[in-house]
Amino acid sequence: MKIDILTLFPSMFDGFLTNSIIKRAIENKLVEINIVNFRDYTLDPHHKVDDTPYGGGSGMVLMVQPIYDAVMALKDDDTKVILLTPDGVTYNQKRAYELKKIKHLIIICGHYEGFDDRIRSVVDYEISVGDYVLTGGEIPAMILTDSIVRLVDGVIEEESHINDSFNPNTNLLDYPTYTKPREFKGMKVPDVLLNGNHKEIDEYRLKESIKKTQERRPDLLEK
Image 1 (cartoon, rainbow, N blue to C red):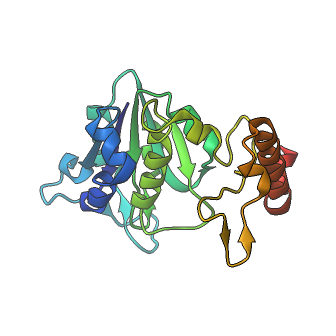
Image 2: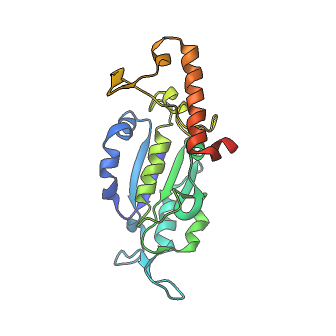
């Protein structure tokens, strides 16, 4: 899988790409992640990528030309383009599973007051990470990349993400987990997890997942 992230602030991704699961996935050649400064594609002699909005208003707006040309230079027949925007469809685990099947993703990080609406002409998905506004799309791009890459075959054990909260097959929150010590300040690990009976353990975990979902996210059960 290949992911190209278009941004004006490449250094924001330095730590993200050189630690933990993302780093291992890159080193094992399971995913290729490129950080592209779309300022490199501007035709403006002063490398300008934004300007004041037509019709007036505050802030600066990202120009269509640099981003359009960057996407055209990078995309091929297997590419899907994602625009990160607060007015996009709210991101979820089901969408992460859909996106991990795509061979090449281009993720556009917005910034400043907004972007020229004509950028949407090269976009396949418009995605929001929640009902709030950030200064730019770099953090949302990391969220998408992390959530997608961990689902790529070979990056982590399949069982790890099959049992995740929000898995499309169950739509439940994850069950509670425990490790050593068996007792801490009077709080004990449930006996069922210690008896070695995997059928009973599976039944207990499903029951606890349903219970947690009912208490914290009943809307998921309605789905």
